[in-house]
Every structure is written in structure tokens, then in C-alpha cells.
Image (cartoon, rainbow, N blue to C red):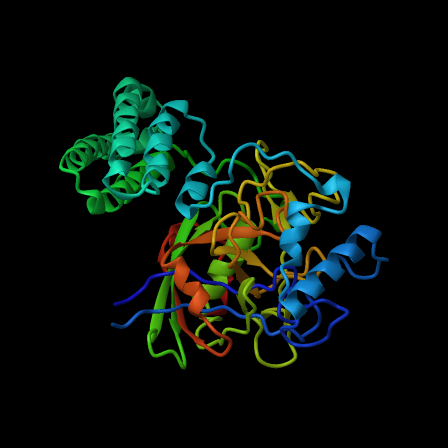
Length: 435
């Protein structure tokens, strides 16, 4: 049985070559330091900061906390999130954070259509209803389905009007399938077939997500002049990462499906897709697994990232963060440095399997090829109450079999990462120039 999952490795605040500068030991922490950390990235399948400037007190405190956690295994970051010692880092959080990667990706789309969201929300709430034991959960599920059906009936015209002109026919077909699917889900509930609810819910939410993507008409903003010639992902893409797992009698191979979000991180996602097309990660080992992240992307040899053959230098990309409510990402600065302590990121570190770029802790624009996946859930690192949101560039989520990331170990091998959709969204691909 093959498990599909998307994976990347990251040392939560650093690249594999970049661990905590004070601890020059490979894989010792997730802060970036030159070629010492062994953070890498893996996939599996089943069978039967800135250099050259003084550290601020705040940065020093964060470094100590992160180092302590990664060395001792004590969840100091979690304690930090719950009781931040630095008052200006605290944020107001309304309601529980969204943890589902599919929901995070849907809400991250650059659309504003209330009618479709009113259908989406009760369908997502089915997951909470299913936490109730036994068939009693079905009473709550039935209310969710009725609410979604009513919202679709009342808002269908508004939803169709929100579709991009060139995609209206496809979107209307998807809405018809959604309507039929909700009727089928209603019958499943009436038959008290609890086991059939979740698969049908997943199908319906896929229709919703496809409809919402059909509402996006072109790329919504201009990438800054200084980055517009870099590889850019102007839209979404998906990859399958196949990981060979060693020394595990229960897990031989894993395939992780990863969805990459170029709407909110075009430079970061474009850089990664370009590397995937170069087969940069194929055959690379997972370099770091510490219970907090899985990381990879540090190539063999002295280089700390991808060496561009055209320049013979390490290709780096700027820190790129999309703030909720803004039309374009901010670049080269953390949200803390910008004074945006309470700002919400469009792609938060909420989901198990959140994928982001590793970089040097105090060098914002030092990310190159090292990636990581978060293994902590948002109860421990709630959105915008941790020190990752707004500091590291998230550009995707593992959407299938993400739980298997917890079974990946250092030394497991990424057999391949293959692009399965979205190549048409890649602009300025350097892999074509290189041949």
C-alpha cells in the first residue's frame, strides 16, 4: 500500500548548512549555520536573521530557546508560544487555528466570494462533528450537510458570477457535481453509514477547492522588479515525493503529495519547482529529523545550497511572506522587523507537514535549497503565537499521507520528487536554459 505525502526538510529556523550559529554541530538545531546542520527531507510508502549586525536581545532570547529545545528535546518553543516572554510578540487569536492543509490552501486563494465560503465552512465542520463517538456524530453531520445544501441553493448564482469568465462552464459543472454529491452524503447519513462520511466529505471539498481556484483570473499582482526574472510559480502546483525508508519493517516506501502555493509565495515556490525539474533532490538523504521538523536540501560538498551553473555561485532567494489582507507579499524582512507583531500570515505554520524554506537565522535572504516540514501541530505552536510565522517562508503543505512524515528518519532517501501538475504556472524556468 502506497502512502502519498509531500515532504521537505527544514531546521525550523535554519538551513542544514545553517544551524544555530552558536552550535556548529550538524543537525544540532534548526537555526542556520554554515554547513553544519544535517537537515533534510523525505517521503514514505507503506507495505502490509542577517549577518554582520549585532543580535538584539529578542533575537538572542529566541536563539537560546530554540537551541535548548533542539538539544534537550524539551518543548521550550511550546512553552514560549503559550507564555511568550517578550510582550510585543504576543498576538490576539480568535478561535482555534485551522489545521487541515486543504482548508488552509482554500482560504489562501486570492478570492472574495462569501457565497462559496458559506458552502465550504459547514462541509469542513463535518470533521469536528465526526469527533463525536459512534453514530451520534451523524446527527451533527446531518446539520452540517443541510446547512451546506441550503447555502449552495441560495448562493449558486453568486458563486457562478464569481467564476473567471474563461472557467465558467467548468465551474458550473463542478457545482452540479457538488450538488449531487451533497444529496449522496445526505443519504449516507440517513443510512447511518458513518464510515462513508469522511471519504464523501473529502470528495465534496475537492469540488469546492476546484471551484474556488476557477474564481482566480490570472495572477493577482506584479512581482517586484528585482525578482521578476527569477523562476516564479504564478499559481499552484503539486509534486509527489517518493521516499525510501530504511530499517523499518512496517514502512518501506512513502509517496507524499505536496501542494505548492505560488499565489502567496511565487519566488519561493518557483525556486523549488525549478530545482525539482533539475532533479536536484533525487537521491538526496533526509538530513534532519528531531521531532520538530524533517529537513533536507543540503547538497554534498562545501556548498550550502544550489550552485547555479550559469553563475557558479549559490542561488539564494529573498524571504517572502504574504500577510493576510495584503495584495502582495513582503520581502527581505520578518514581520517582527516590520513591527507587524499581530499580523496574520496567509500561509501559517498550522498544519502537520507545513513546508517552508530553511535559511540562516540572521540572514533573511539566504534561503537556497534547504527545506523543512513541520511536525508539531498548532495546539503546540498556535498560529502567530510561535516564532516561525512571519520569520520563515511557507510555500506549501503536505496534503496526503502527511502523518507518515513522523516515520521518516535521517538517512532515508528521497528517490524522486516529480511535478504532477502546475508546470504551466512556472515562469522563467532556469532548468530549461541549463538543458
